[in-house]
Image: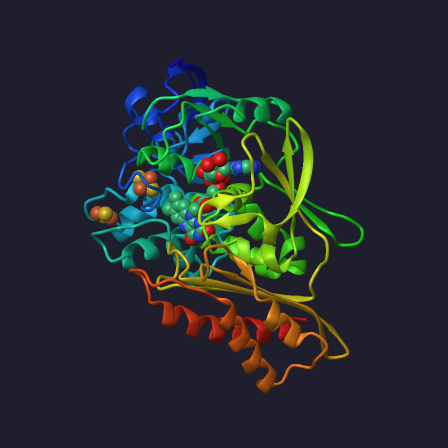
Length: 159
Length: 282
Ligand SMILES: Cc1cc2nc3c(=O)[nH]c(=O)nc-3n(C[C@@H](O)[C@@H](O)[C@H](O)COP(=O)(O)OP(=O)(O)OC[C@H]3O[C@@H](n4cnc5c(N)ncnc54)[C@H](O)[C@@H]3O)c2cc1C
Ligand code: FES
Ligand code: FES
């Protein structure tokens, strides 16, 4: 089966790749490009561990065929910190201890980042609902939510 | 996942020609197809993406408030469309019930309908909007009413090569509402889904429409219940009669998730709730 030329812009870097159609964007990011910050949990769209931002929108990369991402701008967890400075949501996860094993963290951070970009003025209930596609088996979510709310507050006050 | 040839046609005619061949499958947002291919319940030799065909996505509103929703419109865009929220609230509410934001940013309304799951969350809202489904193929175009599209679980009247291009919603409803009966707040499939839409004329119900999902082999309209409501003011007694008529229209199954009896009873309850709320909003 023919491989396809795929041009991905990941965290600002261009990648010209030859990709088998059956490879998911998640597999391309992790196995072909070597960006292993994005995690594979369920592989069925249910857990959110594989969340990346494609053209400004959070998506589960395990549900996307890599060939369909050609020409799109992708941000992964590796691309969030600019010039060595962490994104407010990354810093907030550290400050509140919003993780234990850390496996779900990249997905939570990318999903939160997209929500904060769209609208940081959400209530706790709204953030909780909007993060319903991300599963954590360790923390019980309290610290995660605290981190996201802290980041939202910081973004609101510095904006 | 088995490997496959991948095609990205830029015209409907080309997509339809490719899709008319055997062992092919269409790719819209991929949230059903990719799962199916991973589970090997789908193993197409060719996958034909609709993503590069211009004009298939977006919500447009005409001056008479009739609305057209392109088949490739993301369900997240359906959920957030101000016009759909206003004129077809039940459809916006149904779209908002699908999976997570990350899934709704991928899933299309065309895929949600073409996949023909009886539990699809946009289907009850489209039923009460009396949606007209525009279908294109190499032989031309045709239109099917949404209540004639489904023939069984996972089955539609779509022939090989036929592609849904858009849903036309001819008549706005001044009040409508969708309730998804589920256990978890998000990321759950509907045990049943009920939508109701009404217009009011001096307090008298006109154009009552009730759509039921996941309570019969295909999504259905509860026409007996609709007829009871039309031409009357809403009273507690009428509401109870409509609930019973809707439950009588359902032919639910028992499965691991809940019993047929429970589904029937909940059709009655949720019909009362959705009709009441639709009237409140009208
Ligand atoms: C984690 C998860 C949670 C989910 N939760 C829900 C839920 O709560 N409620 C719910 O209703 N759904 C749910 N779904 C399923 C939902 O995402 C899909 O039904 C989606 O809407 C399908 O659209 P798609 O664009 O992704 O379709 P695809 O997967 O691209 O296509 C699905 C099928 O439809 C056909 N098709 C697609 N577009 C067309 C067209 N224009 N014309 C003709 N045929 C076409 C294709 O042949 C294909 O086989 C969930 C899915 C996942 C992964
Ligand atoms: S790995 Fe993609 S959602 Fe779980
Ligand atoms: S910290 Fe372990 S899964 Fe969330």
